Amino acid sequence: MDNPFQRLSTLSGKSFCLISNLNFPCFSLNPSPLALSLQSLMKVPPHTCSLPAPPALLPYVPHVPTTALPGKLTATTFALERPCCIFDHQANASDAVWLVVAFANASDTFRNPPSRADPGSPGRAYQLFPDSTSAYMTLNTTLLNYPCPKTDGEITVLRVGSETSCQRDNTRPTCNGPLPGPGPYRVKFVAWNDSGPVAETSWSDAAMIALTSILTILFATLLAVSPLCPTRSHDGYWHVTG
Image 1 (cartoon, rainbow, N blue to C red):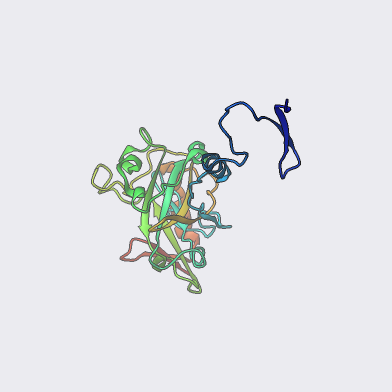
Image 2 (image 1 turned 135 degrees about the vertical axis):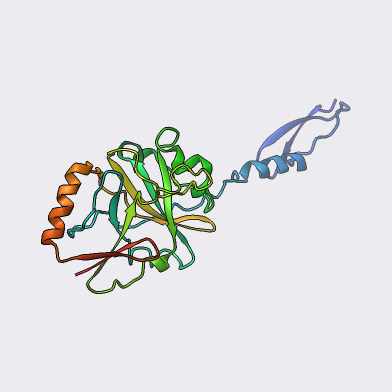
């Protein structure tokens, strides 16, 4: 009687026992197309979402002018030097540059809005500050108002909190309205293009706004000793020449 067990050798060198006198169906030793398809799917790397690049952090810290300037700090406003020549290599002339104003203890949790249209959204409205929002964005402009190079002998400043007409106007969420208290406040500049924020400065040091009575004395003192002559142009900025 023939041996019912026959040993077959495969190309891989492995042996399998086959019962030849039983009517078993034949099975291919090669992987099935379905198995190959599953293996191929398992080797495909998972799909990853492409996140927008974070804005470039510029080595500039917004600051109050160091030059003696009448009204540099008031009960509801403070002055900032314009960020001239700061964004020139990171932003285009058509990009929007905004000033972010926040209480000092809220600046660490602030996140830049992802869209150019978002800085003026109702959720970040000046009129909601500080009860319903910890920061607001204002003084929207372009690089044309921050020319480079600076004009010799001229100090150009922004005044934060100088608009009173839109203080309660909900249709003006980006109002540069009076500051609601002594602070302290921190600010930074951010440039947006159509894709989102592209560059930003560091946060400023904390700034306190002073009491009116103290500033009245300071203002009179500065007028007596300072040769600077501040003038306000049609664009709302102060220009000081000496």
